[in-house]
Image 1 (cartoon, rainbow, N blue to C red):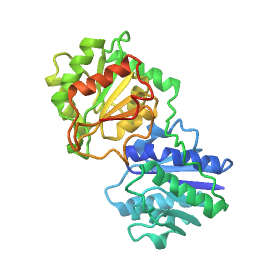
Image 2 (image 1 turned 90 degrees about the vertical axis):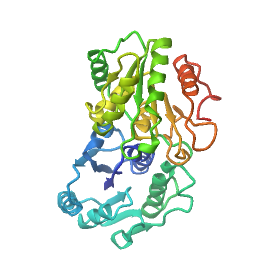
Image 3 (image 1 turned 45 degrees about the horizontal axis):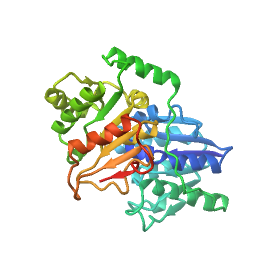
Length: 340
């Protein structure tokens, strides 16, 4: 069997869909699974063991061009089954025009007629973590295609494989950028390109950086997209010592590898927070006005810290104390998870 998976459109969603793809591989062990997704996702999935092929595309200026180009390209591969993670009309019509005979996705945005198996959005959608939304689609695939109910929902696994070669390249990039291998490396993800309201204030990051450098001789590295460069420049300007600013100069794959070799990541509620914990790095995720219940990184390595009351930012001292606990190796079952 040849299975086409249409990947998600955002970094955080891509990571949150990984448990679903792992389960898809488990229930179809002999299938040829192709992930069709945006080109930026190559850096996340190039080493993935749960897919056989990665087909990427760059988003065109016009959605109709994306639909035409992708459907014409995919049509020749004679897929038997398509699983469509995004809720968009465009992703459904692409699989329809690709002539995939079985097409499974959520019945949203008037696209039910384009799917052979339109799945109702579960009533718990806004109460449970997003990883279960994607896993539910695989569970429905298991029931409808194989007539079973075997999808495992208890311990979703979101980890991302990063090769040793990519990790070594990341270490070299850090050394070449001025990092001292004798000190721990702490990565700050201080932006959030699509939601400025999710940003912990720049002066807080700068103050935190000074404490980490003073108390741990830490290399503080700033990561993010080109659109977040202004935030990193603001933090660098406020800090009392030089930071290593790699914002906008790495691909997502390079950023993932840097996160994989870091000792700690401290991030706003944004895509790289999901990547950091998924590649195996302890991660502190700072939440203020947004609710972490459904979209926090789904990993025991990710710890959410919030303010004393709902909607408030946490204090710098509280984030610094949590960071110190992690860098000192004092994390245990009682300190892991939600911190408020």
